[in-house]
Length: 113
Image (cartoon, rainbow, N blue to C red; front, side, top):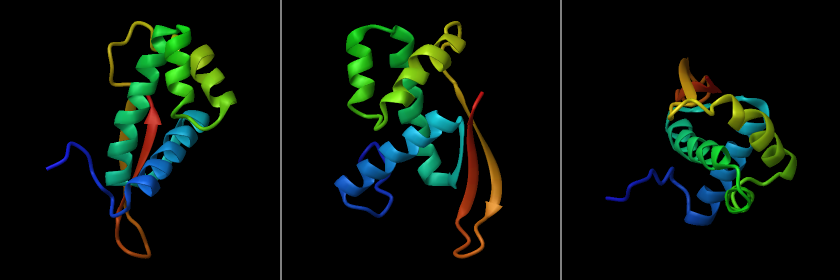
């Protein structure tokens, strides 16, 4: 059993979807998505924030290899990471919204603490 959720997609599509989710999440500070997608995106986003807290060039390049927009990386290193400098993890919070109207999938709001 793998240590991640497959989300019913091939590897390349899943990776692209998660990259876009994390980029949007860091850009806006909040996203609404399904429960399982949010749980996967949450771990990746927390990893990006932890990297940004290091603040060195190697960390910036590692984040740039995953996050798709340079201005989001700049925001992450200059605004978001300093805010969590004293915190040792748990940068995100999830709220259950309820079932989605079309297919009944459980929706959540993922936001920065």
